[in-house]
Length: 149
Image (cartoon, rainbow, N blue to C red; front, side, top):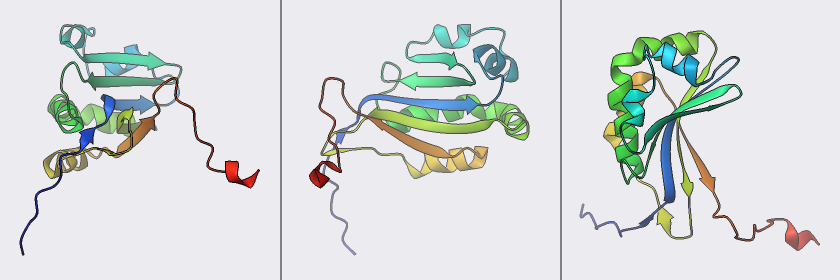
């Protein structure tokens, strides 16, 4: 069977890939503690990699300043998380939600590629992959039910 080349698609804009841990009492200090990191120096010294948090959630995020594609961003997370699999398992056992989320602006004609190797790496770590699409600010949001009047 002859394989045809895949047309080059425009990538998602403002792309970030994050390990997202959510649940009661979760914040950046808890995430640092679970991964046995004294502080976030390991991440803050690397451009485009950081830890963020809010009420009940924390992320380890890789953005476009560090790696341009979702595949490269997720591979960076896997490299970090591999040695910390026991900590990931402990978070899940404690009832925390653990996932990797790819987020970005998905415009018409854009695409997203995640390699089979990265998907396998996430599966081996037992982490689901989710996608969050956002719209560019200032654009009108289309109401899909507007035709109902």
